[in-house]
Every structure is written in structure tokens, then in C-alpha cells.
Image 1: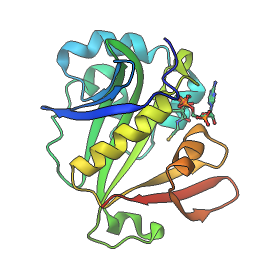
Image 2: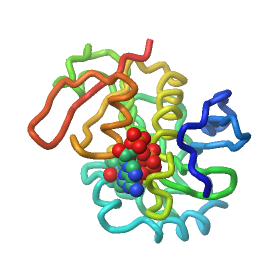
Image 3: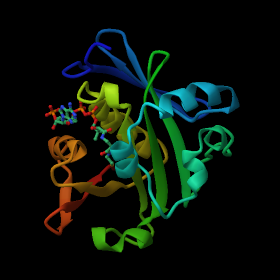
Length: 194
Ligand SMILES: CC(C)(COP(=O)(O)OP(=O)(O)OC[C@H]1O[C@@H](n2cnc3c(N)ncnc32)[C@H](O)[C@@H]1OP(=O)(O)O)[C@@H](O)C(=O)NCCC(=O)NCCS
């Protein structure tokens, strides 16, 4: 795949159900969409191309583990905007699967340490690129598309925890995320969306 880096975003679009497009100046389309039954073969194949270290950084221990079983992932109920709720997504450029991500929607009361109001709507995402597509701009495209999705669902905040040295920290720094905590390894940070 040709790098996505440095390309201008010309448009962002939502298509029902749960498909979000970021359209680039060279005509390519970066999509985050909730996978359905017919995607399970494609997702199983792509998931094998996510290495152990990437899986560890992406997967969360305290969530429904069906998210990481590709057959079950493709059969989860469509996310309908509920809080709390989770939107499982596949990242694609055209028809090529380039990564996986999930966006968790919760009220601020679950994110006290970030200094948000208890009834604020918050989005918190996790991403991995397929190993062979790392460093090509998938993380940057995920960032602009996940911000768009969080706004779409009426969130006041997008927030999360990343390693100080991780790829997503650099991207979110560039977007102006505000640091709310740091323990020497992990950074808690947030961005106001409205
Ligand atoms: C974090 C991750 C999603 C970033 O995606 P990516 O597509 O590699 O990132 P991008 O190409 O958009 O580059 C983002 C930054 O990553 C770093 N980076 C550059 N080349 C890289 C490479 N080959 N591998 C990893 N990171 C690289 C740089 O800091 C880059 O910043 P820049 O835009 O100023 O050059 C990806 O590296 C990944 O899948 N990591 C494993 C899972 C993980 O750690 N997830 C984070 C949990 S929230």
C-alpha cells in the first residue's frame, strides 16, 4: 500500500449503518465500519496478520472478549448510539483490511481521573494496524476518523491512555490533546470536541 501520510482529507462521510469514510486528496477512501456476518472470513485472515505484541497493546482485558473472536465480532449487535456501548470496527483502505479498532462510549463518571463532568459523553478508542501496514499512516487516519465518529455520536470528549513513547501519543499530541495524568510510562489525555 502506498503511504497515507501527508495527504489532505477532502471529506468525511457517514453511511448507515456504522460506516464512516475519510476521503483523501488522492481519491482513496479510509473507512472505519462495523463488520457484519459476511465479513468473517476476511477478518479472520487479517487478524492472523496482527502480531502478538500488537494484539497485547490493542486488546483490553476487562471487556467482552467476543470482540476479539472474529466470527463473534462480525455477529455483534449493531451499535445504535447507546451509552455505555461499544462500536467494533474494521479499518479499510478501499477493500483492503489494514487494521482493527474499537470505540467504547461511556459517561464521564467512568473517567473521573480525566477531569470530565459525570454526565459528559466520552469516547475512548483502541487501535491496531496489521503489522505490515505500520508506519504508513493508518494511525493518523484512525485518529481523524475516530474524532469524527465521536462527534457523530454527540461526545463532548475523546480521551484515553497511551504509552508516552507509542505511535498514537505522537499523533494525539499533534492534535492538541491535553495531558491529564502521567506515571512515567502511560499518558492519560483528552480532547474537547464541542
Ligand atoms: C499505534 C499504531 C496504531 C500507529 O499506527 P501507524 O499506522 O503505525 O502510525 P502512523 O503511520 O500513522 O504513524 C504514527 C506515528 O507512529 C510512529 N511510527 C512511524 N513509523 C512507524 C513504524 N514503522 N512502526 C510503528 N510506529 C511508527 C511515528 O511516531 C509516527 O509519527 P509521524 O506521523 O510523526 O511520523 C500502530 O503502530 C500499531 O498498530 N501498534 C500496535 C498496537 C498499538 O500499540 N496500539 C495502540 C493502542 S491504543
